[in-house]
Image (cartoon, rainbow, N blue to C red; front, side, top):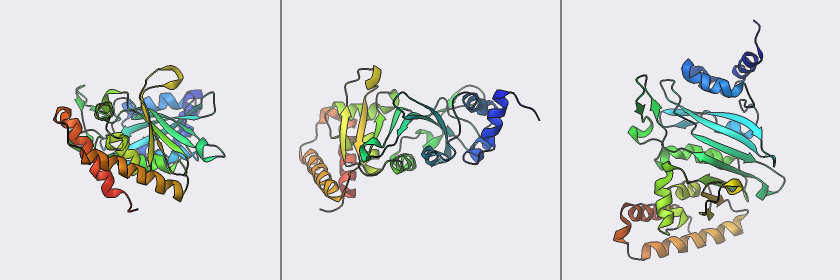
Length: 271
């Protein structure tokens, strides 16, 4: 069989084993969205480290990872899509990100510049249907766990992870941070903690351009001594938060931050 340029590239993509099982299960009208990308500068990840983000189970859904071009500093773009058990792709991408590697620990990082933690799926009628987690999207920390664990696996000790919280699906994180709660006591901060992060930087001034959206940067300790130091500092910060009286004016966001703070403390190693 003869293929045009687009058909040949898609056929080659299907012959790669990494994501074939996910692609094969996607209904044809949704698969065309991925095929259009595979016919341009995107491909399946093959042996690239981003392949670790492919076919992850998030609730009753699975991820589909595709690899994009490099940016001007050599970082590699990637996209993640979410497919449900009926073969539908969620509306829009689950994430758009960048992966970078280098000879020194700090040169190794991964960033999700766009991350929709509340994906929806559209029924044949056109109405949006939330699927994962009994209508809660992929908001629960346990459902996010496999994704963040895989992201962390791409970053060695001394590297960092970055996740935007500027989009609408991250209102809970935005609110807890705006009320000056510790980063680890926000939903995204907690997920980064569970992925091995022990210290943070909050890029809370969204300036656009190269700075991008508001985001959290989480650092994985370089060695045991730094891990001990950062863990102790994190413990002190969270214990101080919980020792202070709760602010009734903070409503659900204050309750959420205190609950997540206790959860982090429960999972910190004893000093």
